[in-house]
Amino acid sequence: MKLFTQKFFKSQDIGLYECTASNYLGSVSHRARINQMGSPFVKPIANQTAVLGQPLTLNCTYGGYPIEEVFFIKQGGSGNGNGKTGNGGGGGKRRLPFDERHLVPMLGSVTINPVERSDEGVYRCTVVTSNGERAEQAFHLNVVGKFRR
Image 1 (cartoon, rainbow, N blue to C red):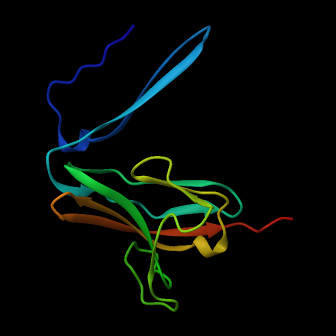
Image 2 (cartoon, helix red, strand yellow; image 1 turned 135 degrees about the vertical axis):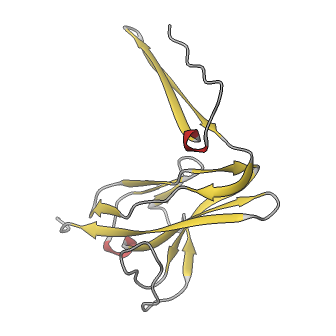
């Protein structure tokens, strides 16, 4: 058996950790978050590429405490590909999940299954503390591939 101990944490250490134990009988896993007291923040999220018809999980690494909610918003219209919102046609914002293809397996993640062309665009991960402080990061999701029947 191995034990992980850490006496001093830095802000880059926050996030989700998973420990898996396995032997000839099988395996078991446990996930836990390491949080940081203070104002909310979201680590920058790189632009993402998804394959049409395949599942995709988007993850948001955030910190601060106490966190009230974490959610993703899909911006209406089109983005310019650099993580900033655009003012393309369509307008509006939609909070995920907004249909049966969008699942929230855990706080700070959303799974799209299957990815469709309409999923392409600018998304924001937003973190809100119990006293109303907010932090967010935007990124662009590009969808590639051809639909096969």
